[in-house]
Length: 299
Image (cartoon, rainbow, N blue to C red; front, side, top):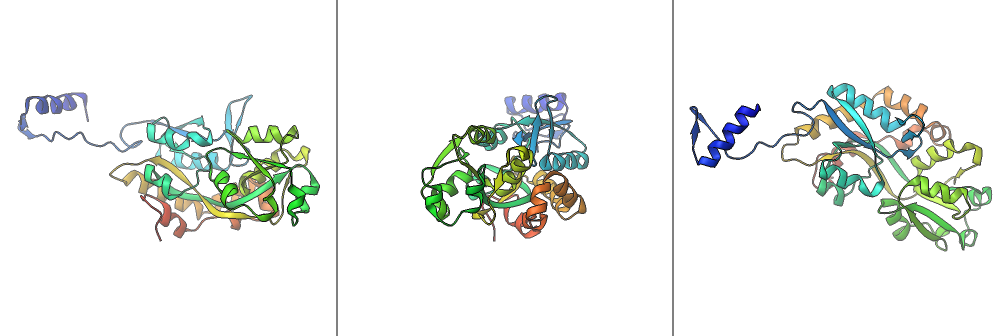
């Protein structure tokens, strides 16, 4: 809407007039769908410290990873430029609600609480939780809880991974102490320095870390696959008219079913492909339908 027409609308409402220039005027401001009305650039939030999913090269400030490739695909389809921003886990939902970012592609797990505050436009990845260790003894001796007695496991604060460790951790980790950090790079630093003995979060993230730190012999513990399955979606601001959400969902759903999704997985998450295979992490259209553009998780 032009500034002239917007000012005319406001003037009519202020005067209590029913008609201006022969046109009936509604005094309700039209709700603008974010990203679809004359905006050439959108801000997209990534987590810049997760190699494989989304990672920022501090020397060049460039982002890369599976989610960044999805961002490029969305950018191409909606014909708008995406400006990347680095987000902490705890800030992802509020950044969308406040309008600081227009989209979040940052391993945002979908649950009832989150989709009451924001919309999710398509599911592009799924993963259960696992454990990354730096000592081969911990990697393969995983039946006896005594192995992890006295150890410290790091996870992200205000995350589903933390909730899982507190409520649904495997018996073998029952004697471990849980510590939290704001970013995964903080957990990695603690592991490198020997201040914690493991990192626990979604397995797909752990494979990216293990691959990136191959020279340090990080291990994703085989067979340790626990907690509820997580589904990563594109977070956007919730609006009354969900055309924007449904449009993005369609883009993401087609992408997930394409060979491009598979190719990007194999390139960006090579270790996960080698050890587990992409099919374990690929969501279904049913997953997307149950979680996208809703106020609560559907059937």
